[in-house]
Amino acid sequence: MGEVQAHVWISGVVQGVSFRYYTAVQADRWGLSGWVRNLDDGRVEAVFCGGEGAVQAMLGWCQHGPPSAQVSDVEVRTEQPESHDGFQIRMTARGKIV
Image (cartoon, rainbow, N blue to C red; front, side, top):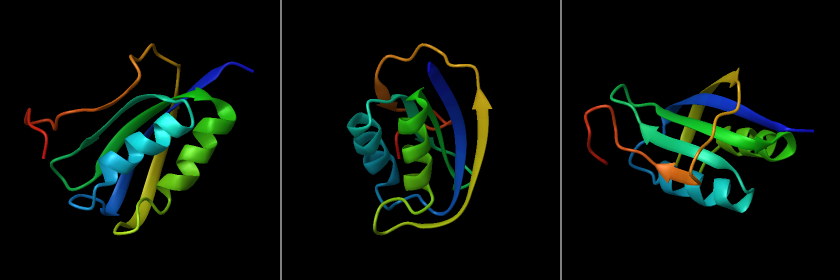
């Protein structure tokens, strides 16, 4: 079984609760590459690339996130796997880390 990639958008109380930090910790734990960032509309966007089981585990984690988060929705789109340099916390669309 090869690599798979999931592009996700997470809604709810997901900013200001260390969601990106904990996402990076979990992605590293499961050996995933990709990235995570806050969006201006209050959602968190992420890409997870790796083995199917690890990506599915990460998607399951995204359903609740870290302890302070309140996830209301997780939208997932399957994509062709891309090459990523590890797992990174990216800047927002406005070019800053918030």
